[in-house]
Structures are given as structure tokens and as C-alpha cells.
Length: 219
Image 1 (cartoon, rainbow, N blue to C red):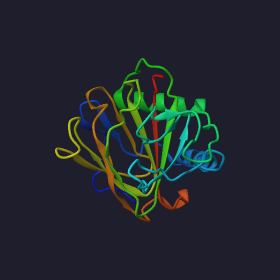
Image 2 (cartoon, rainbow, N blue to C red):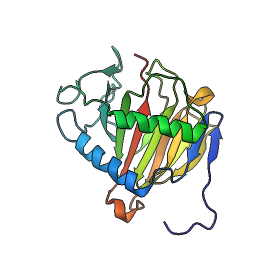
Image 3 (cartoon, rainbow, N blue to C red):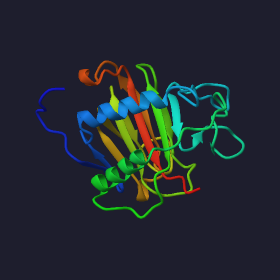
Image 4 (cartoon, helix red, strand yellow):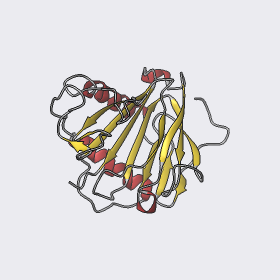
């Protein structure tokens, strides 16, 4: 996006929540994008997520390791794409789990004693997609959540642990940005109220935004 008048720097969004701008370099962004394109293919590929009320999420999703869904009854994580083609979920690649650990060290400055990262939720946002305020509370582990952005810039809204409403903080996330949140912010509400179409790096050749969220299940 050109030379910055005021360079973006590491920011502590809230206790335990850190934003590292431009953390993932261009070559690693391209590698991750190529992998996402393969994971999005059937079986158990990119799908539209249907909510219990009969609506649909505007961001489409593919899962690795465990398949997540917002169904009312039963576990939120299963081993098959039961709301898609019913195929077994694709495995979590070891290199992606290693990337999650690398990200935690970069953001927090230290290792976190935890089981291996075994869940990836990959959300694709077109220009009209949004994500309402929610908490990542379906895992049994309190290991930090790792969030990587590819493609178009978005507004990332990071709130508190008690309510979907204020206080919250809006942060601009660009391609290659990293957000890690754990500790007292592990169950903070967060969402994406806006995506800025056409703002991704031209060399990445991605129309839209990908968010790769990495978690430890604790199962």
C-alpha cells in the first residue's frame, strides 16, 4: 500500500491480545493462499454455514482438523462435514500447527505450554460479507487463538468478555497481519463489520479476504 507516513507497529489491543502488522511476508502469504485454495476444493471443501434460525453466514468457511458448525444440539465440532457433503474433514497439516506456535511466540514473546494446534477455521469474505460479534468458546482449551489475514483489508472489532456491545476497539487488518488473543482476552467478543474491496496486494491475486483462525481443541 506504499510507504507509510506513520509505520504500523505492534499493538496490545487488550491484555493478552496483540496485533502484529505485516507479520507474514509476501512469499509466505502466497504459500498459505495456495494451500487455502486446495483445502477449499471438495470433498469437505468451502461451504455456506447455515445458522439454527434458518439464515446463512455471509462469510463462507472450510475447516481442517475438526469441522465446526453452529447447530443447537450436540457438539459444535465433529469429524465430518455433516452440513456439507458429509465427507471426513481434511487433516490439520503439521506445518500449519507449527505456524500457529511461531505466531504465538512472535506476538506474546514466549512459548505457551499447550497441546498442538489442531483446528483451522478458514473464512472467505467477499465485499459484502460480515461477521457478527461472537466468542470462540466451543473449544476446551484456553490456548491463544491465532488469526491471520490474507487479501482485502477489513475492520476487525475487538470487544470485551461480557457483552457483544461496547466497549470495543476497531483495528484495520491488512494482508499478512497477525492477531493473537489469549489469557484474559481469550473469550473476548470480536467480529468483522466491514471489508474494503480491492485493497489486497496486487501480487497476491486474491479477490476478497481470507481469515485463517488457528485453535487448540482440547478434545
